[in-house]
Length: 99
Image 1 (cartoon, rainbow, N blue to C red):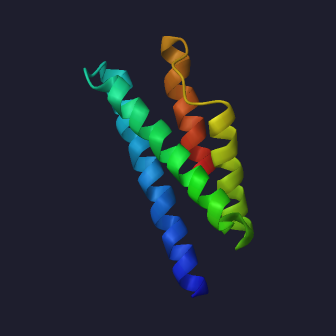
Image 2 (cartoon, rainbow, N blue to C red; image 1 turned 180 degrees about the vertical axis):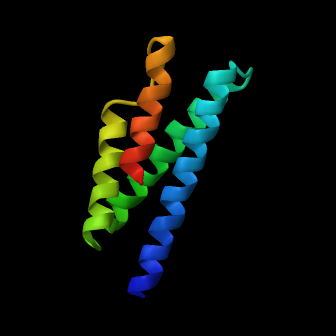
Image 3 (tube, one colour; image 1 turned 120 degrees about the vertical axis):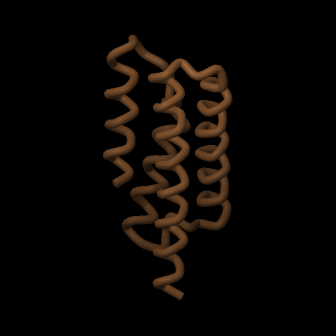
């Protein structure tokens, strides 16, 4: 059971990293669906935050707690576009925090 919880956490983090990477690519290329990809990231974070809070998943391990803390921070300060050069760096910092 314990290994399953870590596997599930890894899948969640990987999915979030993929969504962030898609948004970063859309931002850099000024893709027409950039806002949709950004909304996908926000929706996934909100869904994860709600699920972790309701099911108290953040109590399973320190890794779960750190992920929940990351989600909480992203709920308070959502991913937004900054100046052109800083947005890509900001997204990369967020990705590094998840790895």
